[in-house]
Structure formats: C-alpha cells, structure tokens
Image (cartoon, one colour):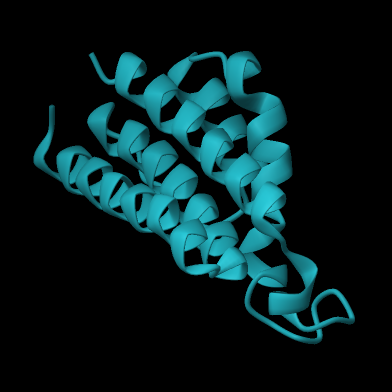
Length: 129
C-alpha cells in the first residue's frame, strides 16, 4: 500500500474509534461527524493507493470518483455514503438544518451512523488489497 493511502486509512480508523466512543458519552452529533469523517478518509485512502488525487467532502462525489477513476463499484456501500455525506455539515453548524446539531441526534441515529462508517471502512480495506 502506498504511504499516503496508509496514512488516510490510519486516520479513518482513528476517526471510527472516536465515533464508536462518542455514544458512550452521549456525544451523538460528534459520532455523526466522526462517522462521516471515517468514511471520507476511507474513500480518500483508495484514490492515492491507485495514484489518483482525492479532494472534497461529498461522499457521493468521492464514490463516483472511485468508480470512474478506479473502476471499483461502490454499490455495496452506496446507501451508506448517501446517508453519511450530509453529516459533514449538519452535525456541526446550527444553521445547516435549522436546528442545533446536538438536538438533531440521539443514540439510535449515532449508532446507525457508526455502523455505516464501519461498513465503508471494511469495504475500503478490501479494495486496498
């Protein structure tokens, strides 16, 4: 694995670990943001592994780039990418969804997003081999 890809993957794993810990402390919006970040960085690990550049935060666009540039299908995680991508913004900014981020999330939603991020990370690991 290329060094840059390895760095992105390690950071994705670190973000996922933090996201997994957030529900323990009731940090639901934190879990949402870190789940999105884990998925984003997992996707961004794939691109440099195959010599491509990754930019942006939109998981749908990054997935499209993975498909177009690398020929790797994202069908297995497409629903997860669609669900996670919006949390880059709405989990952090009170004007993004017309509500305070900490009021938008609960334990169930936080745990669902963490599971989605896990699936994306597992999928990315399989495609890095």
